Amino acid sequence: MAGKIKIAIVGVGNCASGFIQGIEYYRQHPEREVVGIMHQNIGGYDVRDIDVVCAFDVDKNKVGKTLDEALYMKPNLVNWVKLPKSTVVVKQSPLYDGLGKYLSKMIEPVKERPLDELEKEIIDGIKKSGAEIIVNYLPVGSQKATEFWAEIALKTKVAFINAIPVFIASGPKWEKRFALAGVPVIGDDMKGMIGSTIVHRVLAKLTQDRGAELSRTYQLNVGGNTDFKNMLERERLESKKISKTESVQSQLKHPLPADDIHIGPSDFVPFLGNTKLAFMRLEGKMWADIPYNMEIRLDVDDKANAGGIIADAVRIAKVALEKKIGGALIGPSAYLMKHPPKQMSDSEAKKELEAFFS
Ligand SMILES: NC(=O)c1ccc[n+]([C@@H]2O[C@H](COP(=O)([O-])OP(=O)(O)OC[C@H]3O[C@@H](n4cnc5c(N)ncnc54)[C@H](O)[C@@H]3O)[C@@H](O)[C@H]2O)c1
Picture 1: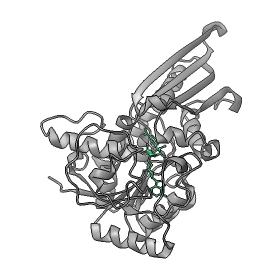
Picture 2 (picture 1 turned 90 degrees about the vertical axis):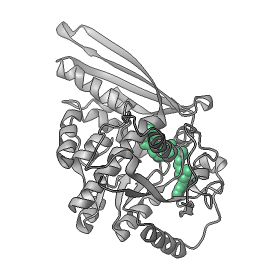
Picture 3 (picture 1 turned 30 degrees about the vertical axis):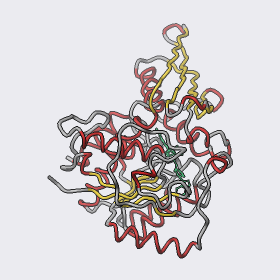
Picture 4 (picture 1 turned 120 degrees about the horizontal axis):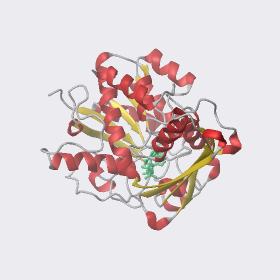
């Protein structure tokens, strides 16, 4: 038994709720093999060894509540298991660009406080809690807020897992700062377990591995949670589109011209809730230039898709801390994230990830 892993959560939304309720589900079923993670044991750690010791948000419904209460507050939707009473009280984070045009109509933020006062409170809170890893679950488009939290990770020497498409692990300037500080970072933008990115990447690669030509492809995604609502604001989507498109392009021998590949969040359908639907089409040519095409429809719970990824990332970050490895974790980022510092095939990335902790 290797002990516990103490983590801080930034953004107490649906992903955080699914992640934490998933851990609780396995605590309630200690005999069960964990489904939904790629590795049962990483560095001696089981998912049940992960403890959230502090959490931050801006939502009036969540700040000041204990974590077990906050995680079920509107507009969160995940309700898989009942969480036991938590001693962690959700603390205030600075708002910056966290809430865009749509989310600010649904979420009322707590009154802003002077930044230096908040920053001091956050640093003290993280140190006091003993958090070793920060997981960033802010809404898409939170560039400045994510940079604030990356700075906090550097100042407190706490590892950083960036689940969102702001380029920190894959941003050369940030990566260098994490390497110099000896602080591990895994990112950016998590790749769902059976998500549209992994399915699309693998199929795109398959067409080429089989010698066929891929000439055009699209991926349209719809869902009904706040993540999808927020992504209606196209101006916040630039890095998400880059992250998702590059992830597929990286698997092709020759990247497709921009007009022949369309990948991105596409619409918000309220009644879908956390169900995400992805529609993909791949078309091209095979022997004697005869055309082929395929259409895929993926139907998944977006938050079940995300939980296991972070369960792996947290334990890998812990191993890196123990081994005193700082900077971007290349293999783990390539396997777990859509926009890592270095793209590789998923089988190559899996080998590198496993070599990392074996
Ligand atoms: N499968 C997946 O769910 C998946 C995959 C890849 C990436 N992501 C990304 O993970 C992120 C989290 O997704 P989610 O579904 O939990 O979103 P969500 O909208 O449910 O949660 C976001 C939370 O952040 C809070 N917040 C907003 N501004 C803040 C700030 N400045 N400081 C602290 N908290 C702030 C909100 O109040 C909310 O509680 C999104 O960026 C999403 O795109 C999700």
